[in-house]
Length: 317
Image (cartoon, rainbow, N blue to C red; front, side):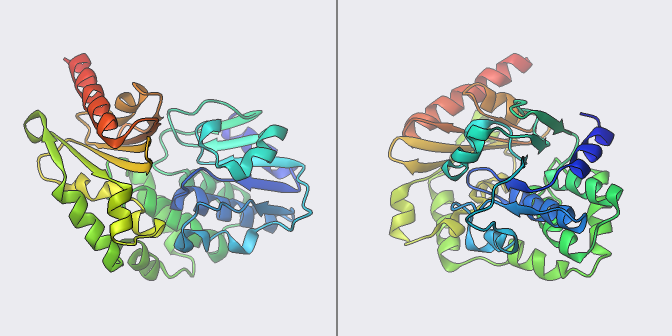
């Protein structure tokens, strides 16, 4: 779809249900909340399907938009979700009806929807939702706040390599509305629980270096989480911890989700491509940040991902 086709399609729909991805981050939930608010300001009926995997902090953005039990959508939209396996089980019933529109920014997008709008130049899907709201003339504080969260969290408060001049322009535009962006930045980037700090310490303690320090790998196990009585919110965006290691061009964080199920998060500088590394195991994402889910122990996953790293490095010559 072209952007104008996207606008026409959005304006033509009513009774919309918005879906978000597994282990939802600020981008998918902020986009869902922002787009739902946009649709309502256009006079549409729209809701966001609850995501049971959302942390209390991020779930708050979609709480005003949860559907009544008897809601039957005429159109199903998905935001910030690259492929069908990335939806939570709570979405299964609606996925069987088929997704009508997917709005995304991942290069690994699979075109699973009837209509797909993908802009891989966008640092966050929130940039695309902002462009929709701006073009339709319905941006206000209700729309701006979750979209600011979407963009700031997907760029690590504007420090990740995916951040572009356009990212800053959109963020600046959102800040002109009556939103408390200072508080949003504080709670998302400057506030940590004691358990989170302990988790970070344990993560760093078991970090391994490869390729003369260019690659850093760390694992977060269920035992570590249980030992600290940590909750899901304590582990959110845990991959960012080792990404700041001096000299590391690539970092891989492996989180044990189940005894033989590991979540992989890869962060890279411009010298390496995270999407290429994760694509070796069926994952994907962006050049600077990508992920995968492996039916392996964290030890097995580490061995595999290190091998994938060297494979991609070898291909680069």
